[in-house]
Length: 498
Image (tube, rainbow, N blue to C red; front, side, top):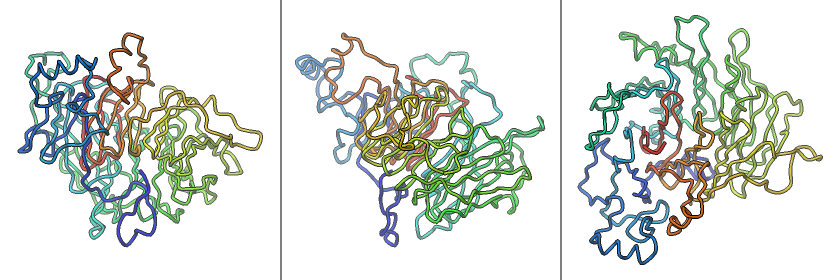
């Protein structure tokens, strides 16, 4: 999410993540088998198709060269695409290898969406039956000349079927309800009149077991205002025929006007069911908005201050109700306690020499925090090793990460821990990829010899999925191993490897 100008009339100031989506060169690794096609779910093209691991030479010739190079199993030569290292020739395109996916659907929208969130539903946890169903919210990025077309989208995705295989291995018990169906997208649109920079959903459990949870969204827009909507009726309408959404139900239940500049940092506290929201802006200020006992919303007029540049991301602690972390273009991650009267950070760590675009706090192991940076590096930190100095919060120098990777050569735009496995991470980057990582992988001496021919490809890298203009990625909390990512379009996928 590097700084960039959005439009000619706004080119005099930098923005984060808000540029118009443009065509980019595609660098992809066919060994990972993960390439979407512009015609939803159709793996055909009039252009030349490059199959994984095939470079046009006879097999014997290629294998002889691989043996001579000592890299029979892992060729990083000119015949194999390595993501972020090589470019396609004119007229060439890439196709997904269906044997590496359990599910893959690419779904277009009227306008691109920079940000989205997955909404928990009442269909049950640990779901493995196909076709799958999921509910999401997203904000659009319409052309500047048509800003009035921007909206908050409440969506239901259904008919998400499993990949059809020719190997006869589709007989698992969990696949009894699988169908060869096309995906169906149902949506409800709430007018916003401004591009959504980031959106997050929050649910308040119902006191009445016969009624659904109340689902709220916080939408931070290019206008600098933050809108809180109750989208419960919109979600209910998908499964209750004849439901009509009234104009009043499309209006925000609260509008936060404290920010004087736009921002990209939004997070709901998972430990405050009624609603406790943090929002950060390009002026480096963070505001706290809470729902009071009477159901109204109150924004603290004293912001949290400490960052010397824009606040790029915010994450509440998953285990401590008063603690949150923030990431900034000043290269730091700061940890705060909302009970502090000073409104200053308790800890400040310089984790990068470039912008820190995103952070993710592990829900499984709460002392682990990951950060993604503008130079393509991402890292994992053990917060138990972060100690305040006697000077009042800051620590000189960059702390030691317990893991760091510079595989991506473009900015990290999103990263998220697996909801139940603290060794698995999903990362989206500006090189048009979403990568999956297993931090628990350690190679013994023999395995190290086998991978010696692959340069700059860490053994912890599990999978690479092609996502044009990748912006955000999330794990589905109720469908194990399933991810959703956004860019020029949405991808919903599950790999064989996770």
